[in-house]
Length: 172
Image (cartoon, rainbow, N blue to C red; front, side, top):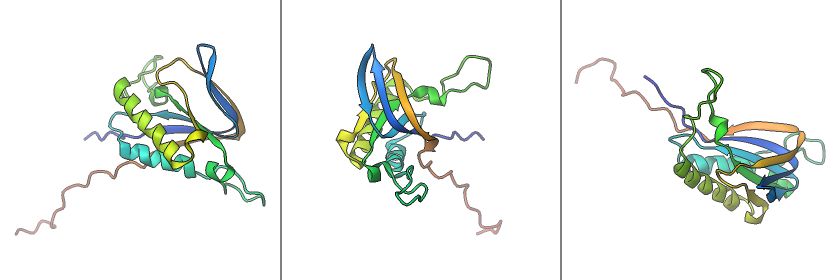
């Protein structure tokens, strides 16, 4: 039996700065904070988007002033967040030399869920400190990675289906 592992996936990069340019125009930029490259898979729901948004805002990626490692979140440091949709994160390269993108959610559905996810990140932090790329545009993403720190983060997956319970073979 094949069980599909649906998951909303993000690559987080701790940055000193990041920007998105479309058609030679900078459409978004941030200073110190997190660049989020996010991809939606078929079957992902608002529940996964909620989970991932919460993780991004609360994830401890910075040291404290006393040298304590991994103590502060983007909220704690007053940083910014730049979200960029990137379906290519879900590409499969198992066969041949051409990426297969069947693992990514289709355009309209992905756009709706991505926009929901973006709004949840804004709501979980400070809307004015959360910026966005342009969905389905050819974007140039520039960044100065801090550390470097780059992490893969997934939404909490739904629990696996439980097999039907048996009563140990006893008849009723």
